[in-house]
Image (cartoon, rainbow, N blue to C red; front, top):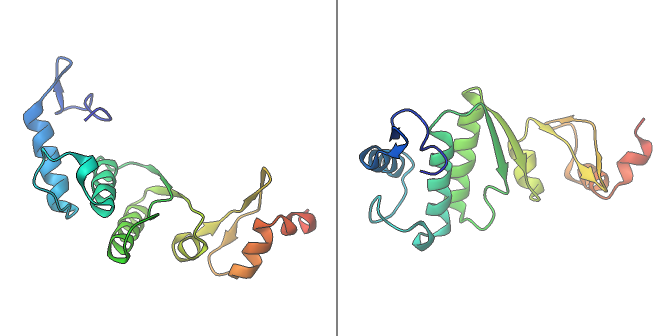
Length: 150
């Protein structure tokens, strides 16, 4: 609630509306299929996938225009990975800009519309999906593509 207590409906005269907070948590649990005992469950006791789904729901529910997804599927099982990725794609399709930061080249190549590589503080030009192979991106990651760039 600390991220959004100031939003209309979550607080009244600066005080948190705990019923509204519980309804919000119940909605996320239901819509994002978070497996937990209920809205009072401690997040740190949930599995990694359920933690990630809860965080994803908390971030996506307000309908953000920009989403920064840093290593969104690291450490998750295959089912949770597919779910998180589908939610990011749905947010993108709904008009949100998604900045995906990942060390997983397969994830980047599967999700990103445009790929930029950072190497030694340098940013590559944007590469449209499918225009570079993993090997070619790997060369940019090693800094080799920058030597040929204008």
